[in-house]
Figure 1 (tube, rainbow, N blue to C red):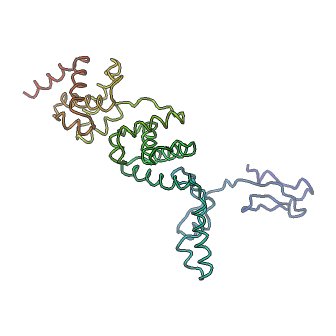
Figure 2: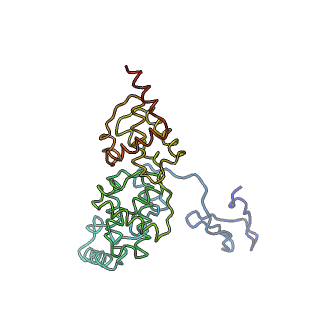
Figure 3: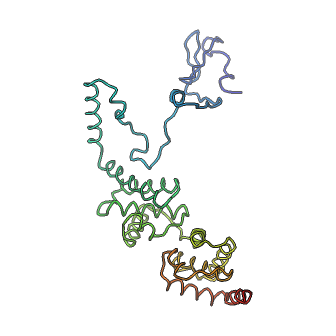
Length: 309
């Protein structure tokens, strides 16, 4: 039974002539005017929107809060340009002046966020990052600006560092080379800014797992699902043998994928694998030798060659 149905009479005059005001969320006694309930929540069935006109009139809330906008989506803009042209000459000029002053009185942090979040959306779109990563990166950058961590650093480097931190927190594999290509900032500068921002904001990030890169590399190299799953098994064995500690996750992941491709008879050159992973051929070769020696995988590769013959 709802709260509204539970209230049957007024506690002041004992009258039963009550009115439920949906717009104000109140129950009012029609006899004495006593407000029995206020700020009530309507738990009835939600309405449906069939066209924009009915939707505007029925909509009870605005857009959700988001860090991807400088005012978190809560600000009010003085007159849209399309609406202003519907006004008369004097009123139109008045609101145009108000719009101009609204922009001028914005704080330095707001102006910085306007430019930075636009750059963040551009880089995020280029890297095809999910909405959750973009939201987290915007939150990290906003905190960095509020604490004055952007001073002495370029806006683009802090944006790239925030995006890399968000990718690491959400286990979305993106390398520093990819961020460098998307943002136009050197890889060393992005890494330096990323470490500084995470340290100052107290963001704890676990080391990236090499297995997170397998799906992307396998898709780019057009390898089979069996090869992909086998490379994950090789990585698990390498982690147990402590071969992954102190080594770059992309290099060890690419080497495991290269070994798995050889074991399944899918030949890919070390150059092709290195280009996809963004590492050098020397790195692939060194990690490849370590995996063969430490995990005794030479036998499996030789068996594959014999079957082909």
